[in-house]
Length: 98
Image (cartoon, rainbow, N blue to C red):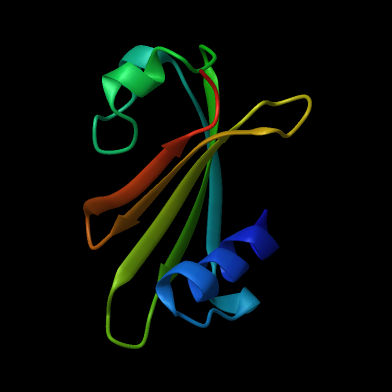
């Protein structure tokens, strides 16, 4: 997933990221714990409960703070949802399940 984050930062946002500059954390959340900024309620309803959210963090040279949140199916590692946050604002999100 780390390679995915770095490739997408370059492809989608034109930001070159070095591996050692990326932070990573993983969290398990129950639906009622999810902040609307991360995942809108209509998307949360379509995801497993509890859900595993992997977060990738990066601060670029201009001081922008980037966060990519990815919900994955724990056993298969299939990507179910992705959200991109820049400087505290959601800039895009995609739901991979219906």
